[in-house]
Amino acid sequence: MCMPIAKYAHLLQLVFYADMVLTLLVPFVLLIILLTFMTVAIVRSVKRKQKRTIKKTKEDGNQSSIRKLPQVRVAKMLYILSVSVVFLNIPSHVFKLKSLIAGNTQLSVEESMIHLLLLFLSYTSFTVKFFICTACSKNFRKLIDEHCCFARVTRYHTVPQQTMESAT
Image (cartoon, rainbow, N blue to C red; front, side, top):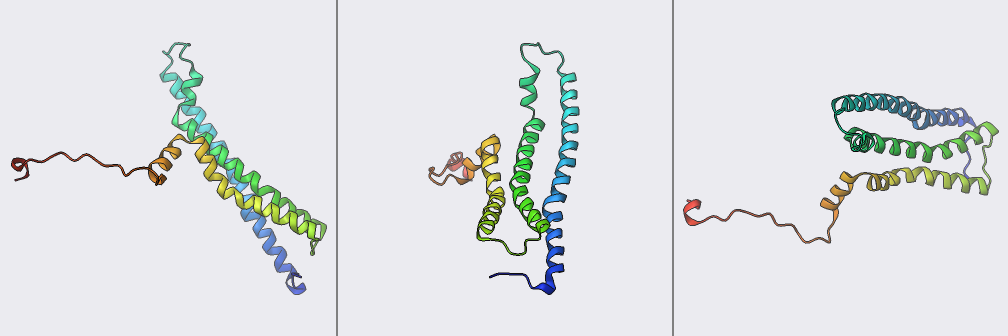
């Protein structure tokens, strides 16, 4: 059975709190602050763009032109990635915090399995980023297609033909 040594219990709590602060609270607070700043900057950018293109007709529709702005596409991608990382990591931290508050130093088999599943969910946040980028980013899909599709025939670049006169 894996149990903490009693004389290191204080150190274990210190490591737990450091882990909680460094892997959950700091990233979560920074994400909220940075996403707020990003939203404000994008709103200002969109308003400036709308002022420059105010001459467009209403049939053209500002919504469609706003969604096509690079800033809006990048912001959408960052929001999705940030929120997914936070939500995939929170359950593991909540479980650890609950166990610490309850004073559980020894987990039952069921609690250990739940903890392992929540850790697995937390670790999948790294994999999920790839699938989110693939689903939401046309440029990401294009780069994957260009660089990772090994089944394709090698692309040949055309080279201008040289004649004997132009070669000398």
